[in-house]
Length: 249
Image 1 (cartoon, helix red, strand yellow):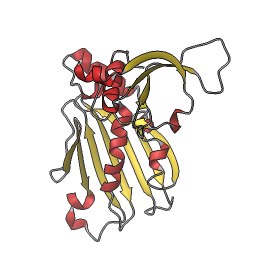
Image 2 (cartoon, rainbow, N blue to C red; image 1 turned 60 degrees about the vertical axis):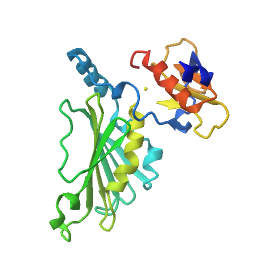
Image 3 (cartoon, rainbow, N blue to C red; image 1 turned 30 degrees about the vertical axis):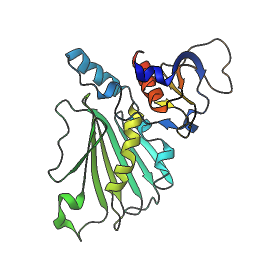
Image 4 (cartoon, helix red, strand yellow; image 1 turned 90 degrees about the vertical axis):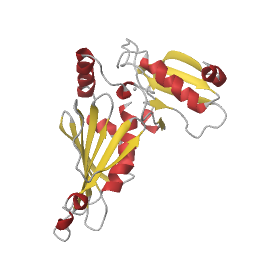
């Protein structure tokens, strides 16, 4: 309670507009919230599955993040839980391919014995390259590959596969985008990470509110939580707790 009081943080629930959300910086939520809580009952396990199925996997990697790798050639949904993207050259073996899936893994993700395992908050991340797994293939490859996974305590998991040209290392690409994918999976908060004196973060907590009025040029009306205060870390924490009070959008 002392931390919350020291933040002088206020929470406001209001109707806002979507107003170019893609242009707003996202506050990484990585290890907090719903996805870091292990389900305890069958109903909770079914709820995790329902939430996972309701998420567009392509939304886990915004085009702005993909463009940091190289020019985005295309992004396609292959299956309801599967997305693929090509960056750079479209010539076989010359560009960078990413494909990823969001799934539920009740018993965890099986990783290669030579995989490198790290933690991002409460999320367990594993990466292994083709040559790590099969060093005897050196000299026989036509491109490079890396398999990566992120396992959440909720039993949700992200599987990511990266292909890059010969002469490059694919796993650094996976390791660069996984924190964004993990943050994107959390109910996202928008704010200014460069603020130093006063912090204001927002999160959308529900679907578009129907209206008989013409849509504003700023976008549709959405229910939004706004948290503001003078301690950035505590404002982020309050935002997570406030968003958790609302049903899934």
